[in-house]
Image (cartoon, rainbow, N blue to C red):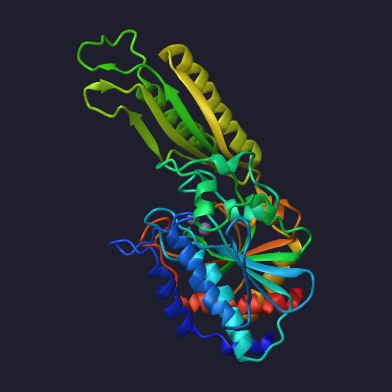
Length: 406
Ligand code: HGY
Ligand code: MN
Ligand code: MN
C-alpha cells in the first residue's frame, strides 16, 4: 500500500471537492443535498463513475447506499462517509471523507498496488434533515433501523418508502444489512469544530462520538383571538413550548459537557393576531456522558409535566434518535495515531460533538475508527472549509493505516 503514497494528488482532490460540491449548490456557495433527493443520487452517481473507472464493482443496496467493491476476499475493510447534506450546508461535511477514499483508490491504482478487499461506501441520508431520522443508510446496513422508519414523511408528505421507490428501490431497506462482511470500518470526516485549528494540527484521531437524543415535541393548546381572549385561561402552545425550551437550555448549561439545541420550531396557525394552538419543535441533546444526556432529557420531561399542569396544554414526545456515546476501537485508534506520526502529525485524540455514521458499525460490533480533518468556519453552513492539502495528508494517513491494519 505504501507505494500509493507518492501518487496522492492534491490538485485532483481539489478539483473533485469543487466538482462534487457543485451538485446541489446554493446561491451563497453552500450545498443542499437532502437524503434520498435527486441531488444526493447525482452525487452517488458521480462518485460511482470515478470508482467504476478504477475497477470498482458498483452496487446500490436496498437503502440506496452506494457501494464500490475492490480487491478479493469475503470480509472487507469499509471506508465510508455520507453524501447528503443539511439545507444550505457546507461542501465538506461527509463528502470529504468519500473523496479521500476515492483518492486512495486513484493513488493505489496509479501505483499498481494490489488492493485488499475494500468496500467504499457513500451512505444515504446521514443528516436526517428531510425525514427527521439521521444515519439512515448506515443504520440499515448495520441492522439498526428504528421501527417503522420508512413511514416517516417529509414536509411535503413524501415518505421514506416513497422516496426510495422514486429512486428504484421498492423493497425493505433493512435488506441492506451487511452480515459479517466487515473486518473493520474507517471514516474520515471534517472535525466541524475548532480543536484541530486551535492546536494547529491538520489531522486528529476520534476517541469518542457523543451520544445523541433527538425528539420532535408537539404542544397542543387552543388557538384563539389575540385581542379578545383574556390572559387568564389561555392555552397558548407557544408560551408553553418556550418555557420547555428555556428549561432545556438551562439544564444543559448547568450540567456542563452536555449541549442542547432546538433547531426547528413551527407555530400554527401562524398569524400575529391568533394565539398559537399548536407548536412543533425539535430537540437535540448530546454528551459524551450518557448519564449527563439522560439527566438533561429528564429535566425536559419535568418541564413537560409542568407545562401540562400550568398551561393546560397536551405535550407529546416523538423519539427520533436515542444513540449512546461510542468509544472507538483502541487498536484502530493506535494504528491511526502511528499513521499520523508517520505523516509528521503528533496525534491528538478528540471527542466528536457531531454524530457520525461510524456510530452504527461500532454499535454493531465492527471494529471502527475515525480520522478528523481540520476544518474552519464551523459547519452546517456555506462557510464551512477544509483544504485539499489537509485532505491529501489524511489520504496518506489512511493508506498507512490500512497498511498497518490489513
Ligand atoms: O448532526 C450531526 O452531528 C451530524 O452532522 N449529522
Ligand atoms: Mn453534518
Ligand atoms: Mn457529517
